[in-house]
Image 1 (cartoon, one colour):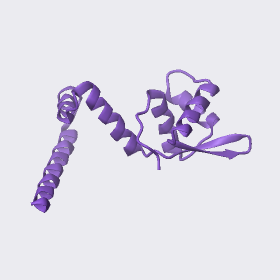
Image 2: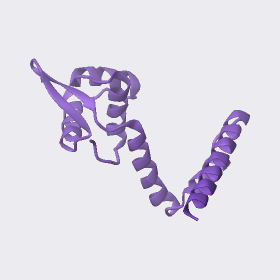
Image 3: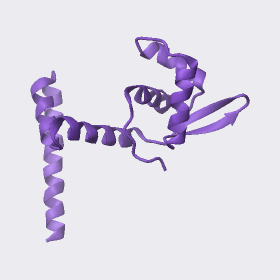
Length: 136
């Protein structure tokens, strides 16, 4: 199982390609990134990123002919949890409510977004209450 890892912006872009495709070679990742990023990346750059991700056990690498096929071991939710946790610690003093407040104040949210947030908050309140009830 992949460990939780905070990804750099480039690593996250590579992982998005793997999450969407399921698996890919260096050349396939490079091709996808060329259309996703504002600049093309050298084959060696993509290969280095994938090699390091494999070393960190974030992706698996299987030899297929003359190249390797890489597959994600880290799930998107695991990456989000780690990266958002780091963001909360670094920018918001470890206070998740500060991040949520910032997003509500600064992001362009519509009625649907606000309804979804209210539903999430209510569901969290219900879960907390149920947890308290089961303990006591």
